[in-house]
Length: 450
Ligand SMILES: NC(=O)c1ccc[n+]([C@@H]2O[C@H](COP(=O)([O-])OP(=O)(O)OC[C@H]3O[C@@H](n4cnc5c(N)ncnc54)[C@H](O)[C@@H]3O)[C@@H](O)[C@H]2O)c1
Image (cartoon, rainbow, N blue to C red):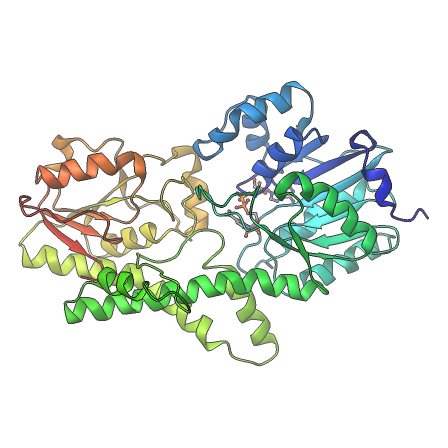
């Protein structure tokens, strides 16, 4: 059997890269590597996604990559397919598929396993697999077993690496090109191959760790750190509401401490495919060992409670002001300036209001009807119990009691300010305290955290 030989990966014509999963992680990676003139095959089991990309039809969040994407497609550096390719030259498989929260029905590694099996169907000795998905502790070792069951020897004639992605969509300062990465590699040759690849991603800024478990724990711990701090600041916001003290002023003052403090700001709860999910992987590991991880467990509870707290606070205001039971939830995505609505707190707030007999409307400039099925699955909903509004026009706004702003997207900032200044609605509840108070407005503006 052929040994892994890093040298043959130096010549970009002597190998190709298959990227499995062309979502928020895999698509930018495919564009970046194909722009660096690596031969890339982007593989996704979602045929609609493949067809959409073949028709050069990009989602809002992908548009910033349009020029590079089109250039790579035109120069044939980026091909798109729904399965792996048989070829006699060497290949590298980079796995960027989803890793759901484990339930009785599915394990978190279900898609990672199927992507690896698909890769192995056409693999040759000397190939390398790099996992980028966020995985539960122990997954890399399970993947190693699958590879060996398919007749390869990890670290001898096939390489296995885990290099967790850290991308933060819409972050203008830290992107795929400058975020340092942690990597585990089964052997030195695989590490030198990974260096060649990541040289073209983040200038090869890699920290090699000694075991797969370390890399797995690092990824989940980073997101646990964020979740716990978000929960801490959200509980502080609830306390400040009751003490009638502005939480933002407290945090900004605390942030003047030059060491040992990192400001986090309150909101309706952490959403998306990472922060509320990855810490659960550490919790699962602890449970398997009969241990507790109380900090994470409590942070998850607080995160779960926040949408209820927000809707209850708004309901109290609605009753005090004697308003009707209709509400607009504005900014449905899990963070500002992205269209990703997975596990978004907005959907939970909508459900709370719906269960209380409210007429609920939703508005988000990024809402995409075609993706609503995906949002429902990710938000564990059978049906969306709200009416989606396409435009924030006065005629509609005049008939509603209040707006709950969950996310402040830059592109609607001016419109929200105008609605407030023109006093178009009686009540605005701002989960992020971003709309500045104005004495001339007749609208009651309430912040989460007073
Ligand atoms: N979105 C983020 O900001 C982010 C950041 C860091 C890490 N991650 C992690 O990266 C992984 C991918 O996340 P994402 O947000 O890109 O997910 P996504 O849902 O946007 O994209 C995943 C894609 O994989 C495809 N897919 C599923 N099974 C497949 C298979 N067997 N073969 C080929 N394609 C398959 C899906 O059709 C989908 O298009 C997850 O583990 C996630 O936790 C995500």
